[in-house]
Structure formats: C-alpha cells, structure tokens
Image (cartoon, rainbow, N blue to C red; front, side):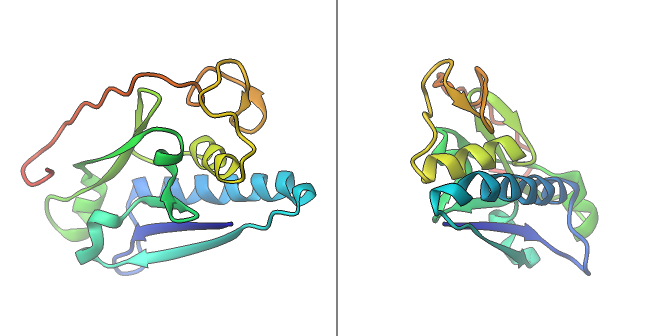
Length: 158
C-alpha cells in the first residue's frame, strides 16, 4: 500500500496545518505497519514537498491514490490558513477536511489510520460500535453520519 503526504514548503519551512498532518501521518503509518505486518501488507510512505504554486494540493494525504477523507466518506474544504499566509507573505488558503461531521485543519492520525485500514479491507467503516481508530470501539469518525459541510471562506478561498 502507498501512503502519500503532500505539503507546502517555503524556504525549508511548512505551515502549522501541514506540520501537524505530517506528524499524524507518520504516527498512523508506524501504527498500521505494526498491525499489518501479520497480514503480509507492506506500507510505503512518500512525503512530497510542494511549492507555492501547488498550494491547492497542500495538506493532502492519499492512501492508494484516494484521499484519506474519501476513504471515510468525508470531504476536503479550502479555508484561510494564516500560517501559509505568513510563509507566502499574504493571504492564503489550503485544504482542511471534514469526516463524520468533524472538521479539522490537520489530517489527524486516526483519520489516516482508519483510511489505511479501509484500503486494506480491514476496517468496518460505517458500522456503529465496531472496532476502528486503531482498534478502539468509538462512535466517530468511523460511524456513518450525515456529512454536513460548512464553508468558511475568505477572499479567494473558494
């Protein structure tokens, strides 16, 4: 399985949102590698640094070519990112996600882990009370829920 992380880099620095996503992805991949070793599934993590002109793709995590949030029935949203704005010297928008009605700027460890498990065919996504999120029974983000998208935009964010 291939996990790809795409994030903005300007002069060797990344934004807070992408930095938090990078930490979550690394933790999820490490945890999934340990769990999937007995299933003979191997994981490859590719981290791809993006330039400012590729900002719309920044803060994206793909699992076997599909975004982590899509594996879980979620969606991505463009929103104002002050941290990117600081790096770029002006107003900037980048990706955040919404899964199970929960909206986050960074793609967290649990979302990435659950997406990996779904891609491996090992996660009962959308089944209430079943194991998910690294093996713990939890109601969210693993339970099917109506998706409610709230767009909060600034000038140029969509």
